[in-house]
Amino acid sequence: MDEKEILTSWKEIAQYLNHNVRTCIRWEKNLGLPVQRYDNDSLRSRVFAHKSELDEWLEQRKNNHNNSIKTLESFFNSKRSVFILLLVTILSAVVIITLLIGFQGKLWQGSSEIISIGVYPFESTNSSDYNEYFVRGVTNEISDYLILFENLKIIKLQSLQESSLESSELKSIRNYGKIDFFLKGDIQKKGEDTKLHYTLQKTRNNKIILDNEIQMEHADIQQIKKTVAKQIHLKLKIPFNDQMAESFVSTSVNQEAQDLFLKGNYILNNIKNNESDPWKLFYKGKYYYGLSTRKSNELAIELFCAAINLDRNFDQAFIGLAQCYINYINLGWDYDIKWLNKASDLLDKVISTPLPSPEYYISLTKLHLIKYVYFNKETESKSFVTVKKGLEHYPNHPNLNSIASYCYYLKYGKGGNDYDFKKALEHADMSFWQNPFSLNNLFYTELLLLDSQFNKALEVCNFVKKVDSSSMADYRIGEIHYYLGKLEKSKSIFNQIQSSIHMKVGALYYLGMIAAQYKDLEKVQNIIVKLENFPKVLLDNHFRTASLYFGIGNEEEGFKYFDDFFNKPSTQKQKFIYKRYISLDRNFDKYNSIIGRKYFE
Figure (cartoon, rainbow, N blue to C red):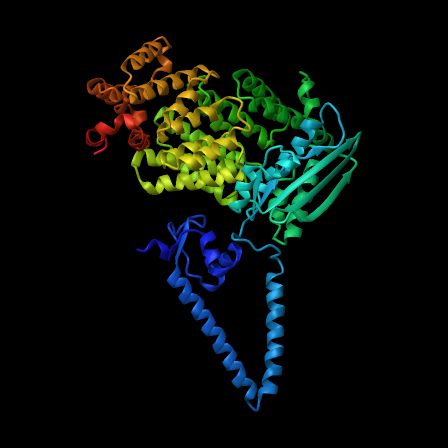
């Protein structure tokens, strides 16, 4: 078809109709504007429209309007016009009042039924040793609480200065319409008195629509997060689920324990063996669990166990302890299934509330996935059942969407169904926009890479780099440039990777694959010798080794490594993922058809 006849974005459609994008989206929804999507199942899919269809729609609207005018003219010429006009006026008033009652809850009308709020870390207005942790704790509690409500999408933002509101990253978020409001606040703590000031601001015009202050004698975190959530729902005029609210603010822990939790640095810097408060023990454990080292993990186990001994109904402590046990395998410290069995027993005890927390579903899904991947247990279907149930309750939770994405990724790897890959991308995309600065989004960049969306993958990496001190984002950027064909950029990045022995080995493989593309046999041989000096446990990557040999034309060695690689049960679970990598890696170009027949037909 004539390309000039087709408009390929909302921006082009809006320009053609001489109206803004929001108006055009509303016309599509309410008036049937003829806009089509490449993927009818997703509201975020790219759109296109035919100019001729838009012209026909406009002409039809114009004709309807003219017919209405003619009808009114003849109506007013009738003998009964005065009486009927009075009747119509009364009926119209009734209809308008009904509509006002029906729509009084819709203060904000956007392109989606879900309202998205970007949450900035609250600031401290007075200095003290524990205030940074104190305000971060309050911010996280409020954010995590708001995520529970299905009509809100919460996006955790970085601690950026006011001037950074116009940074390229946030401009990108705004331009895609991903954030409708910003929530910002500051906290002042003096002795027992706490003052929380917070604002809700429209992103479109920076107008502040909510400006509230909470003042209390004791910092009651449960009351704070419920009050903030209720005020936001009230201002946006969207329903507030009281049952949900009560389910996650009730606790058996007293007021003093909650206050001590909020004194984050005080708790962290004053660890005592004779701790007696389960709430303090739980949050200490949660902090050390988050450090992701074996030593901190073991300290977290002690603290969670102590919290459970003091309160046998403390569900969060049971889940925290289960996560610690899962870490032993997930982080590669000890591949013994006993840790998963211990975690499973703990999660079975989470029964004190009718609706488990998102962390419960995340932990249980992760447990099933690890059994499937590492121990060949038939638990893949259980992971799907668990994560889908979690998403039914918490559809906008970033970590649930992230692990749902991984479930579909594994399913695609085994079966090669493009629908599963599309669902993996969809959930990863949701997770990214719900928490753009999370390290979890590096998995999203892999999916984008495998889908040849290289530029978008690089954009996501730039978000992650703001919080990544491990060079993992840089490593992924190097990979993206390699598969994009920008070998010199990739080579420059991998030459600088020094953060961990695993990434050093991975970088060396990629440097060899780059040399193979340049047909530099001597360089490839030197890198192979260097790799052989590393422990064998780090060199179990026959896929990249095959790329080296195929790149320099050594077909015999290449297929030897591929035979070993594709005969492994673990490879069969991700077979079609590797098929995508093969199609992207130019070292395989000459052998693609043979590889396809030998391993995928």
